[in-house]
Amino acid sequence: MKVIVVGGVAGGASCAARLRRLDERAEILLLERGPHVSYANCGLPYHVGGVIVDESSLLVATADMLRGRFAIDCRTRCEVVDIAAAHKTVDIKDLDAGRLTTESYDKLVLSPGAAPIRPPLPGIDLPGIFSIRNVPDARKVREWIEHVFADAPRRRAVVVGGGYIGIEMAENLVKRGFDVTMVEMADQVMPPLDPECAYMVEYHLRRHGVHVLLGNGVAGFRHNADGALDVLTQSGVTHPADLVILAIGVRPETALATMAGLEIGERGGIRVDEQMRTSDPDIFAVGDAVEVKDFVTGEWSLIPLAGPANRQGRIAADVIAGRDARFRGTQGTSVIGVFGATIATTGVNERTLRRLGDDDYEKVYLFPGSHARYYPGAKTIALKVIFRKSNGRLLGAQALGKDGAEKRIDAIAMAIQMGATVYDLEEAELCYAPQFGSAKDPVNFAGMVPANVLRGDMPLCHWEDVDGGFLLDVREPSELEVDAVPGVLNIPLPDLRARLDELPRDREILVVCRSAQRAYVATRILLQNGFRARNISGGMMAHAIRATVSAGESNPT
Ligand code: FAD
Figure 1 (tube, rainbow, N blue to C red):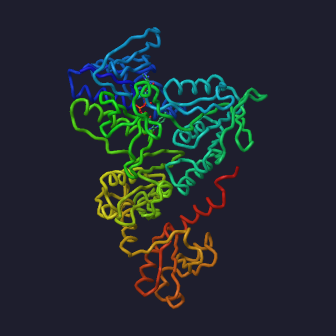
Figure 2 (cartoon, rainbow, N blue to C red):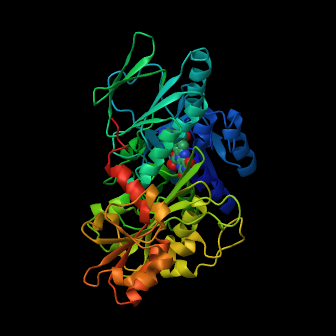
Figure 3 (spheres, protein in one colour):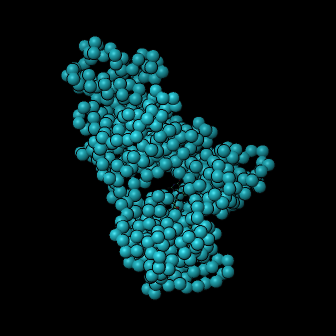
């Protein structure tokens, strides 16, 4: 059997290596148009920032290694320029020699990835405007910084796009001494997050000196009188820049698939089945170029992440080798670190559920410690958990914190993939010692709090629903001096049992504290004394986030 793999990075190299491990006799030809295979695109922003010093560290495996260890005929600088599916051949251009050759295949695997979007804006091709996809791209940015601007008195960068790559590049350019402005067309950074969580990321970026401009697209670029670039925005404001990074998303590379007559899906990616087979049974496709089923919503989606690309490459190899492997779909489980904070997410967000008109969900906000509070160094994790109202099934979670956010999201991600409910998280047995977690881990809380809601033990309320309600704040008076909602009645929790006669029996009482923990206890006291009461999810911590978002602080442009 002869298998040709197009694209030698995450999906392609995984596929080729796995296939060799399963089939010693297969003839495997791996074709990569760039100079490197199996490079760490995820490390590129950190190479630009000088965290990963040597370029060679980014090369996870070399072509020689794939040849030697896996007996893969690995050819770099070789671009597949055409596929004749009817004849099962590909045309290959040797980019150095300029020679064109044709190779036949029994099975073909496409893993060409996705290309950075470069809209046809005026001046888009001016020197100093970069996209980051591969090692040569990162080298160009480093050279621009090190040689062209080595002696520049000030360094100004504009990062266009507030997604993962934009944020990582912004942080790394700050590390390189740049004054960074981030221009984002949407009204929030980090699209996988809900706005209130994205706001925390934005706030963190601002605190570390990044100027974040939301709701403002880039209209074009031009040279200015100083020899630098002017970045023109749709709002009419111009930002001078010595360096521009375009990070406004990626588009699946489907040119080859289209030539081969393969079905392209509604989101613009190559359509595959759960065995990564395209509409041609002898052609497989994996990675950023394909559409995948969203594991939670069942919708077709484009989710360009390294984990799914690697798994899909492996599955395609399994299937080619005759095994019955299947891809389960993607949950968009992802993490990013920025200026010491970690932001992680999995599953569906609330915005998507609303878009789908799905109202069978509830959400809770929690602010647990990263480990036992009595052990030094515990940091608060802000956690949002979304679950089915009707049966408690976990739908998604978002976490932000300085420590331990991603390990909680990883546990919840696995639970979501197993179809688990909040009741399963209540029972999850997780490792604990005080420096690592709590005997009731945040993951357990992510089950206990929703389960309390679903069992009716803790009726829940959100800040968006409190208008006109009777508000009871059970914090200590000194805490209300820092922040309080106007018109609340303050009865500290320890006094509540003695002061129940101050509360109305004909109205629902909405209880608030700092993080909703004391308010939960108060709600239980009230319910068991015949009052109608609900706990305001996330308490004043959620209120603070909501208040700043709705005051428009997030969008000073
Ligand atoms: P790629 O890894 O892009 O590989 C495709 C390869 O195919 C390319 O090298 C290309 O040259 C080659 N190719 C294309 N067409 C042809 C052709 N016709 N002939 C021959 N070769 C061809 N994901 C995460 O999960 N976490 C992260 O932290 C993260 N950080 C990232 C940071 C950056 C800067 C970038 C760019 C991406 C990041 N990603 C991250 C995304 C992740 O790298 C991709 O999801 C993953 O690499 C996709 O794998 P792939 O095999 O589909 O495509």
